[in-house]
Length: 341
Ligand code: SF4
Image (tube, rainbow, N blue to C red; front, top):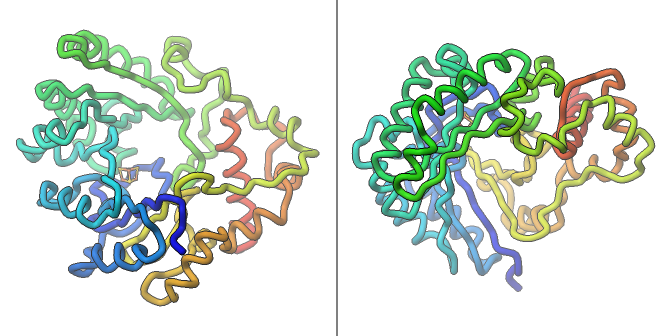
């Protein structure tokens, strides 16, 4: 019998032009997959799921020269579903391909998120490409020309916190809110610290301290009231007997790397979170692991309490700011990493 849950398959067919220092997926090489890998993968899952959304990207959307044909093929490979378009697009392509923003509008994209890490030098360094900041500004203008609202996302830490007010001011100087309103759009600027998975784990030493957040950014801060210092979470959780076990309660989302490794979308794509490999493991067994959520990281997560994770790995004196879920996952991943060592 087919699984009742809908399946989302996101396959890393084309990679990403960036190497962001906060990338929660972790950095991976860009590697071309075999021709027809997409169809082969979709067909593997079709006997097990009635509803499948197929995405040929996992990192940069539309980082494929024939993005039009690709979009049609993603829809064709899906089953009883149309893969949604998100507020995500390739700013790399927006500034290089004069047709692309028009395509986005055509397929119903009315807002595109652009990510900044501060002003020019800092953003270029965090994106991993010289010129990224000026591309983001140029992409903003191109989107506006196509009646698409840019949304400026910023990540804050102790290193870049003093640059972000200037970035907010730049968005005001460019009158982005007014220019979006002119075509019925909405400009948003928001700030957050990001999760602590993948590459962002390495930024733990410079994680923002709540008291250091510049006052003018607070109205733009995502979930500001849910941000607490690590030491406070430590006190709240040190005797907690529950477990940190991520779970797919509704649909199932699976990531496929360009070497056919399979992962849940719970956190970064490190070996302990690997479900298996589509080329070397039997699909029946992979589906069992997916449905039963039976992989090494989740087995370990069920065997250690939150209290124990906190007592072992959290810093009772740390002022670093975390939202609940981000710290829980950070602690679980710390535990998994230490076990590997
Ligand atoms: S965060 Fe997104 S754009 Fe940046 S490296 Fe990761 S996948 Fe690429």
